[in-house]
Image 1 (cartoon, rainbow, N blue to C red):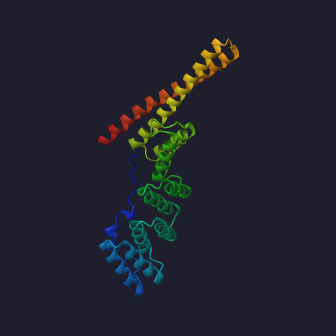
Image 2 (cartoon, rainbow, N blue to C red):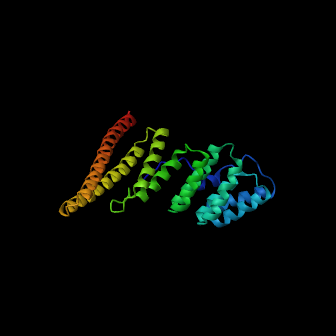
Image 3 (cartoon, helix red, strand yellow):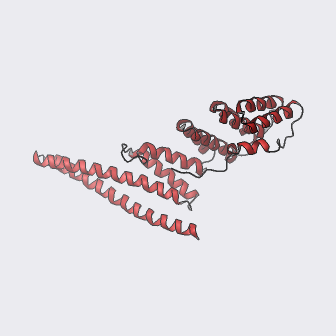
Length: 258
């Protein structure tokens, strides 16, 4: 699933190397090693860049942009543990919870680039603790739940609780960003899988009812038929929601073209 991410500082690797040192204007060894780190980063020697940025920070740890550059360097060198350590150092420079949440959301995106979904989900959950309205973090958490629920693989087992969790998260994203058709589409897929789950359970209940009839077990027959009716009612409700979502997706896409 494609999720639009915020503009992330760690995506600008080469731009960072060519950017002004930082507002703090470090002096002495701090600036010497900073320049050496920028040169190494621009040359693609990420391990060397991380080392030089580390030395600059030893001389002056109050350089937010250098912590960011150090994180970029570790990430590019493949050391995500050290990249996370450097990223989290920038929390000290953030003025409020929303900005701190962005740090964790950015960290989650770092892990997603390496398909490390466990650490990505952990990071996005931290973002939500700080800012419950971080739409990117919510969208990814919904995606993880949808995957576990079987929404991304039609042959995978359906886990209804995970799909319901995904839908709840999609609804939160829709409240924050009602103009994004992708979220409605993802919610529709999850609902479709829930509807399929009800269909399968209805079929199983109907089969039980048939067997109960053959066995002349009236109590079991009535129970199975009641369950089949209940699953049918839930299917009807999901069908209504799916139709409404289809209409909404059309409206949102039409509005986006204006």
